[in-house]
Length: 295
Ligand SMILES: [Zn+2]
Image (cartoon, rainbow, N blue to C red):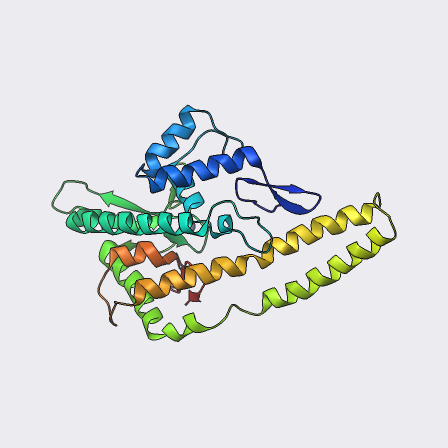
């Protein structure tokens, strides 16, 4: 069973517990970050001290540290015991916001760096690979910059024949997705789709079955083990509602001061657009950080 537990937790008999040693790593990361250490410096420190990450490896990146710093589960919820205080979590979010704003400004100063917002954000709907920036006739007067599927050329052969777009076209595509969102901002006020409620019912059913078996003292029943895993899986899915709420709020905050229609805004793209998928027939799908999708 795959549950992708955040580092610092472990599953014992189908329930989520704190994994003390790894929990200390998480706490230390929050404290270091709030006290001014960069994500990169923290990753370096973890690597040097050979601290294992969630995959039991020591190849820490600033991205992995970043994920830990914004995982709301560490404040605790129905299934995860709290690992960091809400104050510490909020301090870390404040710091990240400051840092991103700084970075956004630097990126805008350096207008040649616009493609940062697109790297690993534009995907091919035909083969799933990310789009890459290709520069043809580099340095010559007829130099051409185009975004193509990474598998356009594979092993010296043209493999994926999905559409090419110029940098300006990509900008227009992403910006119009954001403008569509701005028009339909009321979608962000809707509660999470009903699916988790169904899961809730399923969870209740599984829990009562477990209780029954326990009352009959059938502790070694294979069914009990199965049900325990099922419970863990269901509980984990229900907790995604919290991620949705967190990311929806983040989107609202980011859009608050943006008037419609907006021009190309790299910082905004980085903050709220999860991915843009390009299909061969010209169809384009945008997905935002809370999972909201537009065609
Ligand atoms: Zn492709």
